[in-house]
Image (cartoon, rainbow, N blue to C red; front, side, top):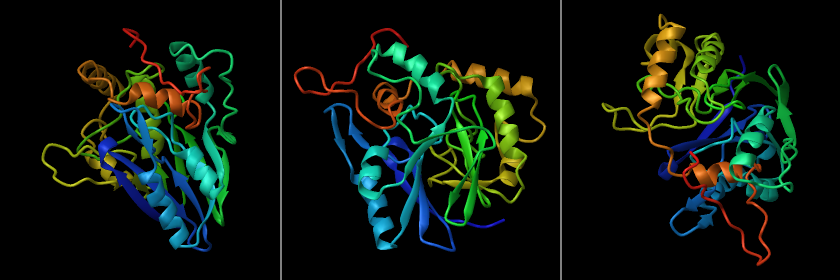
Length: 288
């Protein structure tokens, strides 16, 4: 398998890894799961994290073909519009974004001006779709369970799994958000674990397991099958669903879920300004 050049970027406040994936035979690249810095207490955004990616791309004379999201993130805001403005590239996400937009469009009473058809993105990917990054071919696995729209992008020997899997010592994604499903997640993970054992798995997050002091962003299919604490070889679907459901019942909501979902369901754009010219993010009271 072709081995793309992968550069990671880490945003510690949200424990998020973003990636630049480059074709080794050209200057063409894709950006995955970018971060817009957001100070929730002050209601202020910043582009420091996105500017790091821009600096890397400009320093290496890269051409951005795609700005991709693995799913509608609930723990950070996307910087896709800013990166698109500065670097070009087409935006992409899973076609089931429409389901997410329906769920959260109602939750935030977004109104008729909010299109619930995925049209904020340039491409909506389905299971089995392919796309090009220079001479590299990427293909799409639909891997729902954490959210209905979650994708895994398989690019050469690299798989970008979003929140579906974490490092083997940390486990798997939660399934208690609207549209999540532990049984569906188990089935999605089996798709990823059916990839060749040497496939590199690049993670969207790491929180450091209790006995580990360093953040890590990459593992392999073989390591996940051997050692993932939630879903290693031999763990049945029923056992996984029981574990995941009981564990999710103990978890707090992510700190940035309310602003993140409002922005990310719009492909990283803020809601429209109100009649005073000011943009607002909503906090539904006692809804979630």
